[in-house]
Length: 256
Image (cartoon, rainbow, N blue to C red; front, side, top):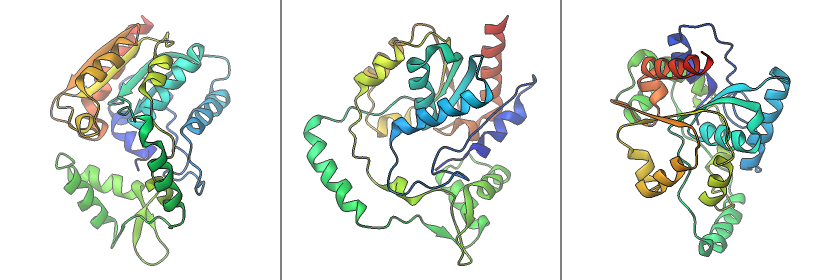
């Protein structure tokens, strides 16, 4: 349920003059809700439209975190000529879902369609900031308060809710197949920077093994891997200065 504004910490730490465009994905932040239909391929369509609008005649430097990193990397393989440099922030894909799970997954999805989804609400933005710090002890109070301003919005009843469509909580009916991601990643021609925390806590919790992780990296023909200390999955919150330095060094080195 992240929003584009959470990249402000990294943007503030950049030294050179960059034209940064940070969208909220559909159904997140200030982007309109889509109801029951969120399909992963739509994110690639949205990105394609954004790039056609802002840079119709030139390839771009593309950076994404987590879900956004997976969108960016798949797009870079589907349309390699549109991406000059790719940066992935802890974007490792998901674990393979065996086909035997398809019937049960679809059954669960159908059941969840009958029930309106809800996200937890908070008394005020300070309470949301406290929740963010409880989830991530590395997050200092100033950054937590900033994030709470953008991650939350009034719910119309005097409380604060997450600024995103609760429908994202529903299980996705499509199975994730790493082989399809690998096929896209092998088509990437852009030099790629892969930034991740030293401790792969979330990746392991989601079932992406070290072997699968190594297989994924091997798909990229020109990749540089950087691991950052003292950060979790949200490394752009925990170590924005370090993220900005490695990203900027990578982009400027490739330009020279």
